[in-house]
Image 1: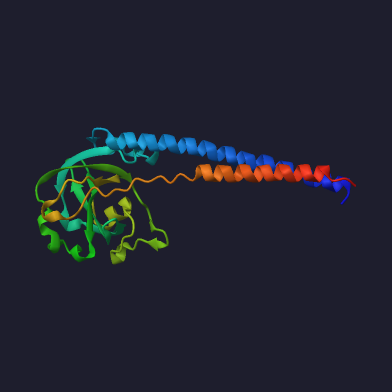
Image 2 (image 1 turned 135 degrees about the horizontal axis):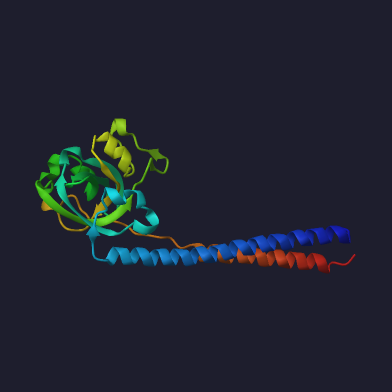
Amino acid sequence: MTRTRRAGFAAAALIAAMLLAGLGVWQVERRAWKHELVAAVDARIHAASVEAPGPDAWLRINAKDDAYRRVTATGVFRHDRETLVQAVTERGAGFWVVTPLETPDFTLLVNRGFVPRGRRSARSRAAGNVAGSVAVTGLLRVTEPEGAFLRANDPAADRWFSRDVAAIARARGLGPTAPYFVDADASPNPGGYPVGGLTVVRFPDNHLVYALTWFALAALSVFFAWRLWRIRE
């Protein structure tokens, strides 16, 4: 290999090292952002509840600023229009019971909690379908459009794999509906079902591993460039 070709390869290796180091720095910055996000979400979860955002605030609702905020709403459940969304939880496989809550100003979808497959029928848990005005406290969740991984919602067949607020509202013929839903807290329902308070808040943090990987590759690229430069004719 000529000296000119070695110099070209060495230069390419150094450029690769800079790019890889840049990716490592980006992962470090992402890790810092993730820690800030976790701290913000933790503060929202443990803060005092606030009124569920009404129509005037809907356009400003977003995952970064509002997800997992503790909210409260008062209204009447429309149990005749509930939707069962397939779920896998610490209690096993079953369904989330998503029920419209009609407040004086708008409709709000509430994930009242989990029921096993044997409690799919509303008649099997009739005691939990409370009539009259109720106050619900829980965590604000952003909508889950389209479905789950490789499993699309099928409104026509009433098969749901995600809590897609707009699609559920259309399928159930609801009026003005909040663009978010609420995961009800662990307050027990009569008869024991649905079981609320099963929200899982998890933010995987692999950024440090990724950063170390990129930095290691960058170091190898520098070493490769150095070896090429040191080879004599």
